[in-house]
Length: 397
Ligand SMILES: Cc1cc2nc3c(=O)[nH]c(=O)nc-3n(C[C@H](O)[C@H](O)[C@H](O)COP(=O)(O)OP(=O)(O)OC[C@H]3O[C@@H](n4cnc5c(N)ncnc54)[C@H](O)[C@@H]3O)c2cc1C
Image 1 (spheres, rainbow, N blue to C red):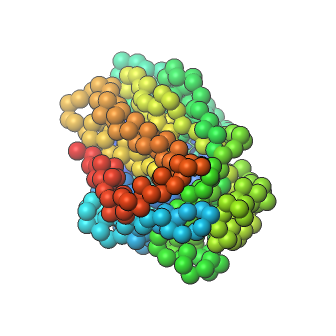
Image 2: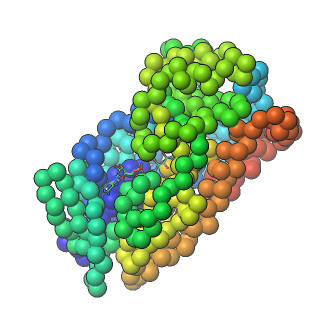
């Protein structure tokens, strides 16, 4: 591939793959450098709200996901100790009607497969697996990327670079921001079990959100309802980077005591034999330290806590806005990348703050729990959902 209309994307995560699909549509050729040797099935679920599915539909990825996605009727917010429902926030087909795009619960492996299938159909996208972006040098007509694999070190002259290389982004460090993401004293434990193992009530197309003291639990069906994705989030000091450290079930179980958690929730937590855990990070200085024809996207730019289920959605939104900016006929990549960064800044900050606010609200203790639950009940499901109109009704233009 020549450098004239070629952009190099570092990272084949949800952000990198979506950016490739969006940029190829506005006339670019794309090289994706992905450090992993293979893109394996990621054993966990993901919720995608209408602001993200709208974009995936426009990129023809939606129809590939639709076959396995579960459309939730809504979110059942529950009191951890009593197990009773505090409020039911309706989503379902009403959300599709209201926002013009569905809310989906997916297996991450299915999302990745849908994106990869769409990428494979584009002759102008090349994926180089087992290849890291190590460095780059900006020059008058573009940028030279330094790549390395187990076998060799190589260079690629391209028009621009998009660092979609995640939380520990090397592109961000190379742009001069050497600060580390901040650990937020919480870990997320995840597991997937066959839905045949769980009681009928938890097989419904619903996101269950149990709120406890210093912990919460989320579970929902994925892959046509055949699997249940379970995520438990607890306060913790363990903060090693990575996606898939094994977690001991007994250790997790000790956090969900009989005194604090209803038996139904404890029964569910006892089902998976294997748990994997993530330490949760975000950044105070979330943003885009782009320079010249180099920019960031997704977690590399603005990692956020998963309390609003929006990290991947923001990466997908970034991809759509970047393609709109770089798609203008006469613009030069550096100034169009700055325009993209300015366009995205306030939106991602607002979402990041909302996720942090939820992290406090979800884990309250003492008298504030009663106040929170009363406020949720008073608001009711419809008004609770309407509070997210600004988030779900967003469009790239
Ligand atoms: C518990 C939990 C639940 C979540 N639930 C949701 C949810 O329901 N909905 C939602 O929208 N979001 C959710 N998120 C957030 C979401 O998972 C992330 O925001 C999203 O995966 C980020 O995608 P990304 O492409 O930016 O980065 P990543 O997925 O981290 O991808 C980065 C890629 O870059 C590669 N890479 C790294 N360095 C280099 C390099 N130098 N050269 C080449 N390749 C490199 C990596 O191997 C990786 O493949 C959740 C997060 C957590 C922790």
